[in-house]
Length: 493
Image (cartoon, rainbow, N blue to C red; front, top):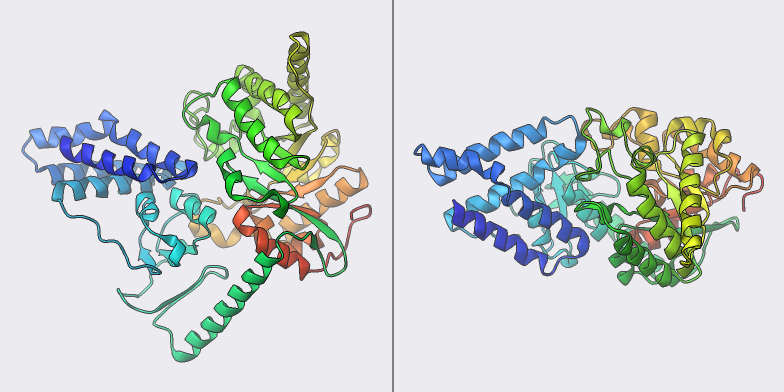
């Protein structure tokens, strides 16, 4: 058992050698789990009682996985995939049988897919994923999104065997096994059209995004960590609409120097283009050891700016790092999960106090514009109380799940979680019109910003700035170029 655990950890460590920072963080989580004695103890106890290592490990992990799958917290339910990954890897080490790699370009079908299975595949040669269960909040879903790998989750039953022809259209959510000639011909035609559209879009990605009726739309990028900018040409976008800072908190609370270095890297890369950095949005599906609190309903609990204000010792460190980094570029700071005007006031006062302390110490710094994410329906309905914000950035993921009362990590209600729902679009339009009337810049930084099926509705609602993942830049710009900016709010351009 001990030898198999060591072998499994070593194989994961080997994968980390060629992984980017996002993938490495996921793999590091798995190694930490393998080092956790509380995970191994039940299996060792069963072995001591006479069970085989394989049976003891299988039974112990089945119990552990069942507990994760039954958790109310969507984050822990999504992590059950990591536990299945660990369980299978140790069993393979015990059996001595190596995992067989699928052929290039294959569509992988199963109940779920583990992160190490995903990372071991060469997706540069095509292929896709169809999962009977799975979660859009899982580590595999995160990896697939960042690499542009077509993937569907919550498909249910798909009657397909190895070597069957399967057609996967992840853009429209369709998968067909053993298609007839007509369906196959239609799919190939649609695929060729999509490929041509993507190639054409990539050729024009350096151009500004302008609608059919002549309205210029800003298209920025979302990044999860500084390493992301290595693969992005700043000339292809209008800046960074959302830089997440949760990556800094993945292994505990980061110090000021670590944060300052990360922020400075991105600001210097962007030059004079704006970089909007979000203060840590911990809580919900993003727990941080030693910082977040355990709650029965974390999406409606102490998260985002609520948590930051409850821990000023941690918040001040981030504020100082941001204030110091601001001298290196065009920084904007965004507070997540704002619900009340007093939260913006308190956060602003904290930044002002830290700026005064830096000035007294003679440390170079600059006060950046301070804005808010609009993701709580109360703010979208009545933004008047937060008109002092320097800008609004609509977080379409959380806004949609709160408006529709449908968890974004729950495949059973995925159909309800649609930003194009009239109620969600109406709120987005209301915020856009309010911003235009009060000279408050409004952008949208959620997943909907890069969705070609949602972009026309967002433009019609008055959105004039979208922030998308880097992989979505070409098609987002192409979609804008083929759309009209209907019902343009007064003052918006």
